[in-house]
Image (cartoon, rainbow, N blue to C red; front, side, top):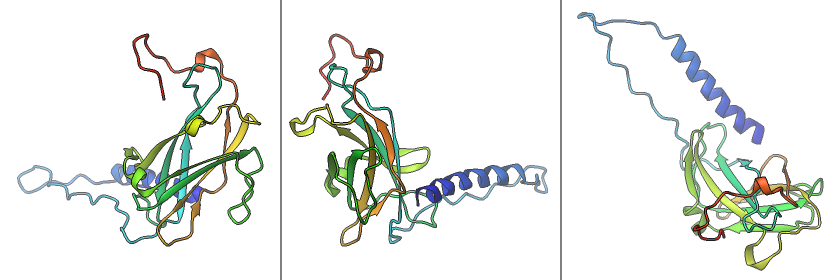
Length: 199
């Protein structure tokens, strides 16, 4: 349902632009324009179940200076279609990376190389807002729990699922392919000599 959710956002933006361009100019008896009616914000009802997940990632980066990419920054939007606005919900997010082409399907997933799970309590601190609306912004570190940033493959497929309490997981539609492995020196994050080491 990822494409449907993204299409909903695009349609909402286009509709607003169309309406704004077609409003007729009217005036009151004293010649002044009337006070515009307040625009009702798009709100997804709290009881609407999440049925679509959209994942957006940046380029993975090397945080410890060894020229191996070890962190993926990800933004996740939860949708309750047909409502167009993403929403916050109680639940957990689980991320997994697989060898490229090896993610399988939600009913028959492949063997993950790494997984990350964010509990409901952890997600409260990951809530954020972007131009598209409410979202969760997280960092996935290959170095978590003392693990290595050198995977058996460089190209991986990343997937994420959201699970509300007492509900089945909702997965992204498809996967996001990410290039890990060795990075060039120009891709390392900039930091001053006095800055504390990155996590």
